Image 1 (cartoon, rainbow, N blue to C red):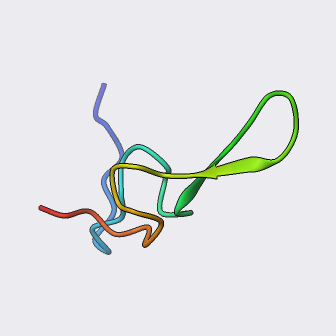
Image 2: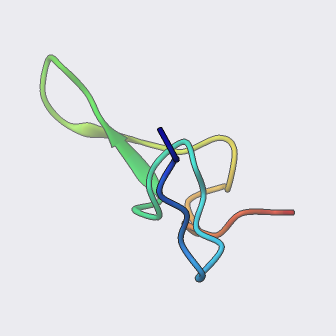
Length: 41
């Protein structure tokens, strides 16, 4: 099975959103992309 890749080079950890939705409510900035939503590589 192939993984779906995006041409926009979005961050794989937060799916390009720049943040994680927390289970208890609220959100946290993605530490991988520093909230930009873009992959560093």
